[in-house]
Length: 332
Image 1 (cartoon, rainbow, N blue to C red):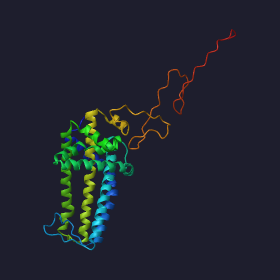
Image 2 (cartoon, rainbow, N blue to C red; image 1 turned 120 degrees about the vertical axis):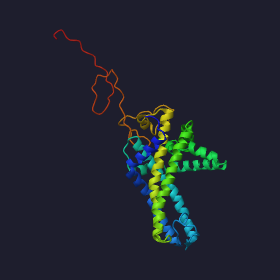
Image 3 (tube, rainbow, N blue to C red; image 1 turned 180 degrees about the horizontal axis):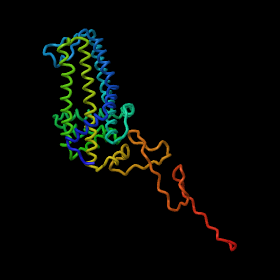
Image 4 (cartoon, rainbow, N blue to C red; image 1 turned 90 degrees about the horizontal axis):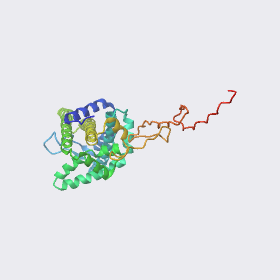
């Protein structure tokens, strides 16, 4: 492997998303579609009139009126919390599918979601620690928050691939980005700019333009608004996950000289600075598995040269001491 520049990183990210679009779309639909349906139900049941797209399509005051404003606010808070959980779940599942694709491993939406569910607790804790650090950086005149956001930009892949958690994951990301801050900033910044462009275009085509022909306070307008949010999520979340994942792999290649085979072997094992993980031989309890739950092929140890027994079909057999030879008798 060789390091990737900005254009190669974006190109590879788009190719991975295209190659696994069915898996990634299925993951995001499972996570995002129920939230959009819940959003429509809560909004429709707690408002008399709801003006879709009022934040960007009209310049006047909002026409929204509430049948139960307290229930509306409560429902929106519940949806907000569920959206955070859903976004984490979907993003982690996308990381899994994208990393498997990059390392040429088989993947599926079900396996990716199961992996994400198993990492949801550590991801929530990491998000809390990361968010607190960025808030403190923002309070220190914004610039430190931008610097920390880039330095910690590969924290989630660190947790998912190396199983390094909490503050240790932040330190590991900081160490990987060190000496490559500007390159990392450029790739992540361009990715977010592209996401903003895609979001604006999709919102215009799916929501703003149809609202010119549909009453913006109708139920149809509400459906269009949530449909636009769903499509934007389907397009942007996998792409951002792909860019961040490739940036993480690229940093490991640059700083640690890993190639694909070694990186795939060590996923979920000991940190890169430490010794390689001990092998688990075939036939052991459960066999060796990496961080993504894939079985790791194991090779039997070499047979000692003192063994004279042929290898058995079931694997390596312990050496057998050679039997003493009887001297021939005179009759022989």
